[in-house]
Every structure is written in C-alpha cells, then in structure tokens.
Length: 87
Picture 1 (cartoon, helix red, strand yellow):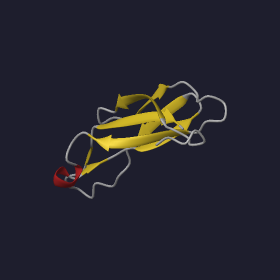
Picture 2: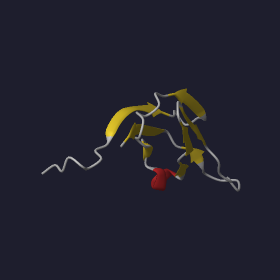
Picture 3: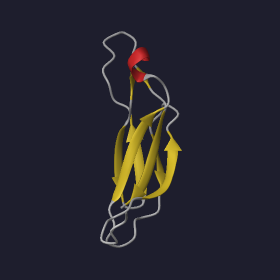
Picture 4: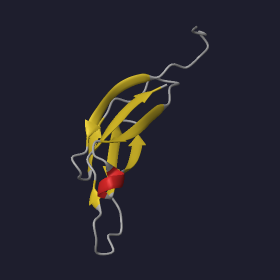
C-alpha cells in the first residue's frame, strides 16, 4: 500500500571506490528533497581487516576518504560501493 504523503527514495547512482580516496560530481537533489548515501563493502571487511571510507556529501559533490591507524599490521582500504540518491 502506498500513501501519497510518504517520501519514497530515488536512487541516482553509485560509485566504486577502488580502495582509494576520491570524489565525483553528482546532480543536486530536487528542491525540497534530502540526499542520502549508503556504503556497501565489496570485500569481506571482517575477515581481512578492511576499513570502509568516510563519506561527505554536499549538493553537487560526493567525496570519500580512508583513515585508520595500522599499528603495524593488517589493515587496508577496502573497496566499497557508495550508492547515492534522495528522498
């Protein structure tokens, strides 16, 4: 059942990080809408000690950066897919 007063999310796209810091230009949301993102790992981050990126979203831009302390062992920047859209 759909209540026409509900906000339904609209997917705008995704980007794969490749395990490196980066940014892309994205379309701004329509007036009155709020943008969102979701980060999904493309590797087993628990088994292999991978870290996901921190994501920043501004109207027209999506950026991500990896940050962690290795303490001399095992951590790596995990490849991830960042979905973005609005609701």
